[in-house]
Image (cartoon, rainbow over all chains, first blue to last red; front, side):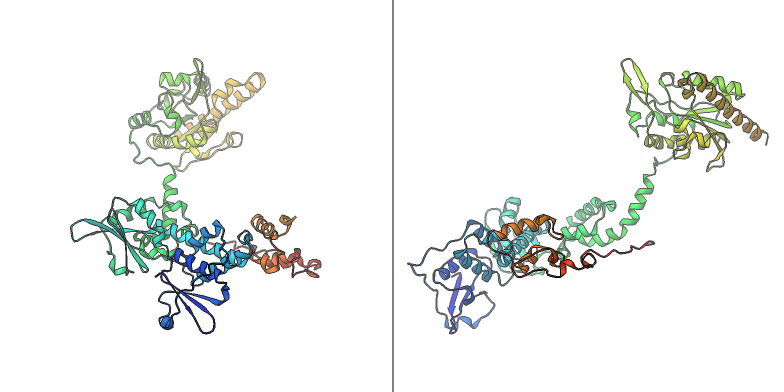
Length: 477
Length: 76
């Protein structure tokens, strides 16, 4: 028997549901009561076990009048009721009966979203659906060994509503090949590979306390935790605290959340481009930059061009990047711009072979156009990546004076973009005590014509002379 | 027009329109469909509600608009 019915002396019909989630039993009783013309106010629905002595004088089931009109309910109501009956709210049977009763007069009742009962059933259905979803996500199985030596996976779960039976199909399909049990305070399910059996309510102590694989799972969980994307509110919304106590990984969460800030700032620090151990010789850098693929330029069809000059040069001249001819020759400043630079250096009295010449970016960046390779300026990000190599060279050569040709070289040395017009003609102090002078790149002079060219050449020459003077001062001092 | 009422969003308006097919709404019906009935009240007429003097109050905005709040300048 799935439902009991009793007529109390005051005319109240009391229905006791044997199973809290048995929709068919409720449907059968409700149908009979509607046909019997019993209004919702006169029906009390109770769950089994709520009260013991009520049925001492049980009256038996009311038999519907065969001449009574057929009970009508929309398909939508049946679907909602099937789901809402799983809710743990003790008033759910009464709510459903009240709705069914009202549906007889108002068949379109469910289309009225402002109705109190319609809203309530919607809330129940949503809550049940969420609980079912959370059960699918948060059941954690632990391996246990059966008396016959086989492995059985046992999980302890505390659902909020009567969803165990409704969710059984999911677990049977999902874990068809394994033997498993899900224990809950309201009942248990046991799957042996072929047959699903129901068991009595269980306790937490009935499930195994842990298993060796859990450590692995915890380590996995900790490693996929991204401290930079910490959103505690969103996490708690998707993984409410009430489910935490039965999930092994949740013990890690407070520690992970607390350490997130420190880990994130450590990641930001490390993000300042750090490639590990710096090479200790120019030869080491030369070999390393040939293998460098840390920015897209390194992936083009080109080769790295190492700086050249005396290892203890007092002056380091930094250009932008190798050009087409430099890439072919494998030496810096041998193309058209290099020749312009040579001419001006000679005029200013700086010996090229006593200076160390290099580039802010070690590879030639270009776009192919037919047979030609057209120069492209490196991006700030690419310069910043290559800065590592430039700094390694500076650490070895230790020049007293640096001359940056163009904005890219200045960025490679300063780490930020500066305006050449604003900083040229005067020394800038660098962290290691050396001086930086900034001027234009000689290729800029190549692009100019007539008066502007003459003017810029004079300024370039003036910058070089200033550097030569300063170099002489430093050399004598 | 309903969408122009402060406090009624798209979902609430859809629900109001659907419910009106069945009956005249009362104030507590509307309250069930909206987040805050206090914000909506001065601008609607329901079966059991008429905002007689409320709509013309000079401080209506002060009553309904969210209070501005000075945020902490030197929070850690």
